[in-house]
Image (cartoon, rainbow, N blue to C red; front, side, top):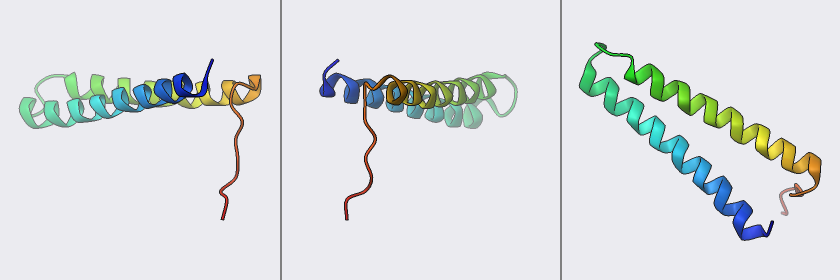
Length: 72
């Protein structure tokens, strides 16, 4: 897997996470607590965040990506 595809996958995950965060905010403002759409959107956001963290840890463990320190 080349570097640009890895970056694209991580950015796509982050965009979907932000989308669900925005959806949770929208549902919270529109539904006013009448439905569970806010909870569902925020639950999906947490699940995607955990999945992204596990994916990055797996990629580091498998050697697909290599972490580096901050150069300064």
